[in-house]
Image 1 (cartoon, rainbow, N blue to C red):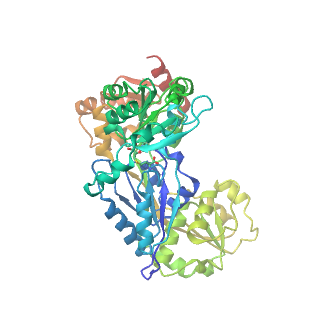
Image 2 (tube, protein in one colour):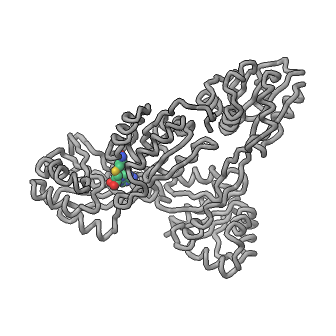
Image 3 (cartoon, rainbow, N blue to C red):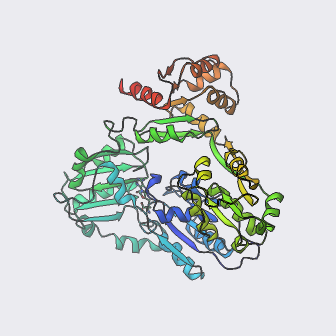
Length: 525
Ligand code: SAH
């Protein structure tokens, strides 16, 4: 949130989100995402990147599929300018690299024209990364010493039609480099392969298509120029896909890794990880390492407590506190928003010493408030925080602790035991978010979720409740296409009480045991 009297226009950051795999965003891009007031994103940016948005940031989808623009480019340009004029820091998140066929240049030009400051954060382009994840390097000492990235789809607006044809000189393109990478080329694959052959590339030049490169849904097909159209049609490859032409394609046999089921045996499997309140990410992280695409449900949502009178009065009397302690980046965000809303800024903190639990919290403090923490404990666990507390004379001093409503009391109790007066103010709630339930039901019903995992009885009952407590028959029908894994016999019994049988039960009732059971199940096919 920005204060009402902000009149200084914000900056627009054109950020490359990378090709899909959320780990491929740059450090700079991620930092900006975490602090932006508004994030404007499209289809090719991975949705999980939005989880890094701070509490209270606006997220605007302007999705683009090559033929059906959800929002027209001029409207996107205006949106960026308009948001910046409101004083907001705008993160324009674009798939791949913003300046590789992303129309980033047009967005930047419009900002310049409107007098809005902009910065560009380059990204990992699909032109290189899709091949890399398919085991195809764009260059190789033995196979290619140059590569070219080419659009397979020129602008088709009438007024520019003549110019576009002029730009696309097939003789030049066919011989532009050893490796040719076409983006947006799927609809025109027949023309591309034909023109390349007509202009001197041998019809037996290896060619590959990589669809949804770096995503868990990545699919790769290979052939030669002469048959690649047929291969693509048979495999029903659709956009987004890159087409790679050149001898490097043959290296896939040797260099394939991301979709190699020898080393990543769960590749391509979408697996539901149901969770109770505790984080489910340990299981998800392990599944991801084995190549799977874990889908967590419910997700966790941070909800800031608005009009928090208790917090407002603490902010007004900050000078009476000796220490201000932040336990999470979310706490920093909500605090900073509220302070600005009250018409205050970082100067209000001048008299306090500040503790930030964990490097992410310390970094958010720097980014949001420009404040360097006085104390960042080596380990962000309450017990360690207390043991290392730098101020040994805190008896009688006041400490403000703005944090999540559902947090443990070890830290405030420990500080009180040291003689301090601690004001704990809940500033946000972590709630289980079941809003994606309809989408989840569709996925389960269509069989696109290969497996469901349950790590406790409560995950079973929570899921059943979230999907509207169906009858036994309805539930059996819904779950039929998926394999059901239970962590142990108690969880399996809860499933069976609800009519769900044929469950694969882990013998060792731990997360590693469950993982092994899942692996064994799939390796026996
Ligand atoms: N700026 C983007 C490209 C935008 S043009 C980049 O640098 O990657 C959109 C085209 O990019 C798609 O039609 C497709 O050809 C390609 N593309 C983007 N992401 C892709 C992915 N994950 N896998 C395969 N192709 C992708």
